[in-house]
Image: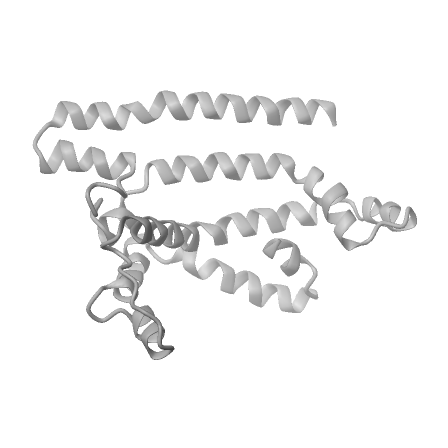
Length: 205
């Protein structure tokens, strides 16, 4: 939806927005996550300062299981979303205008064009970005390490961070290697399913 909104901005404005969208992605993940840690940090949390200023209770962003997971997801989206938005924007620009003109002639409104023209034409790129997002998330280390170090109670570990925890910090290198290698069959099966569906849709087109 964000890419669709940017695509409807005039060309001059699009350049500025595309540049702004890429900023979170080009900043090193560890550095941007450190900035988020300062916002979540329990003693001097800027978010909690705002909440308390509004008369609300402070939130244990990094010490509660639910909020720690929420914080990890939020930062992960912040880091990765700009790259996917640019990919979606490029895909939107490749959709022939004739399809939208034909839909307008048939009486379709903006919502119907989005559902019946835009999304079907973008299904392949959406599938690829979902696959890429899952692969990057499985192997994510910086965000978990900087924000929570896997806590509280090992509730926010991903494969990469848990492999480091048991293999390096706990000294069980064989187990750490096994955890990291366990990602491969899972991702291989997922990649096979998604890429096969993409290939079938391409042939049908």
